[in-house]
Image (cartoon, rainbow, N blue to C red; front, side):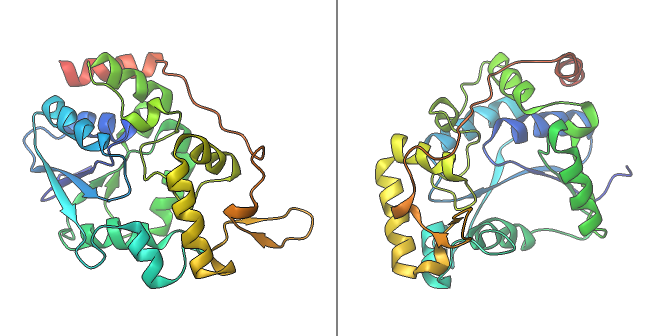
Length: 253
């Protein structure tokens, strides 16, 4: 890939985006590289600690973006837009992450994403849907999986974000509308106050904000009617494959 004006690494305070950023910095030495992070109020506070630790690992400070229209709050987006998840996803992602990035993005920028090896099809789909966007997925190219990233971050001496240690599969906002029944029951157990707050927001909006449907009838239902035993919640264990060891050699050389 030819070099562009800048390389923008999308850092989400997760293990995958951390390793993708570390690898991109090694791949684009001499280029203008920015590590970009969008602050969201509903993320766990420990994400800020993880960001600082990763900045030391990168040897580069992150450009921290913050939405002003909604106070960087997902809940405020839901309240004002009167929905939490639609056919095209959750409105908070677009308002608090994509739009703040659009304000600084240039046409010739290369965007670095943290798609993992397991998500290679998603990355291909993303490229097909965005043909004019110059983007890179170092983890896909190197065959690095999500569990590999967890282990690589730990081997760098960085403690994973608290959300991972609490059993969540990523370090996104606690109480994300895109989660399934098992995810929400995990939120109920680990963060009952967040669960209650999301339930109350759903009810204030109405049935249009309900996430789930009964399999037999197709009728929508919300968190207040979620069976506490519904769904599964599987936590990936930190591991490391042959591919991540080769990648570490590239950025430690």
